[in-house]
Length: 297
Image (cartoon, rainbow, N blue to C red):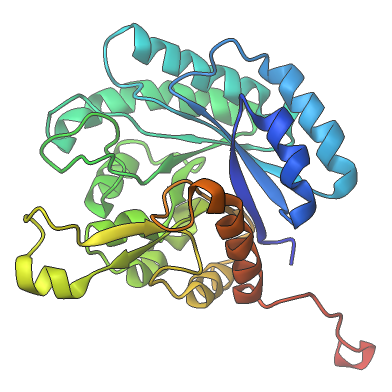
């Protein structure tokens, strides 16, 4: 079953304190994340501490991530790029070959206007990663952006993916995918997953619930909410189908639960919801591994 591990996202600045408190609940991987930059974190030292602690428990670090906008032309963007470079250089210290984050965006310009800058920034990062044996994956969150305008990320629509991978057809560039962000755009994630599975390097465990009654009565431009981000096990997606499609496409990454979004299982119920999602996803994966009789081959 370890070919698809079930884990969760952990803020890099909290990893040393939080992981020991939750590790015994059965998480099989951790994705270490940073917001905008790595700040003053000594990532080499952090990687060693985490792998020394998790290795004997047969728990892995699935990826390290920085979620900023590297396509802007300002100091924040260059700090984000520097953080990408450092994480690429030290990914192996975490025992992973995967660095993920937002693709970035030229602020409030249409997605196609960002492609030249995307090619410039990630062309260099992809070369750096390839030299280190590292892969790069782009998270598919819109951050409330549209095709025409946005602040953070162009990698939230399949047409944008086609443009990105046409600009940079490097084999070490892929997607960090989750069904939630597509469902928010009323995209059915299942046919999309079938088409893009070969380009998916990591999966975020986040789901959505769509209120079709509200959409039918009020549309999507009224003040009434019509979709909620959900922890897996509480949303609309069939994760058995998702995992089956991943398996049929030889996916061997992890599914890392992205918490802190569910409108019900949050606050004091955050860990309750995440552990429910952990057990639910393990069941969708097929339950506990059972060795076949020798006569079965």
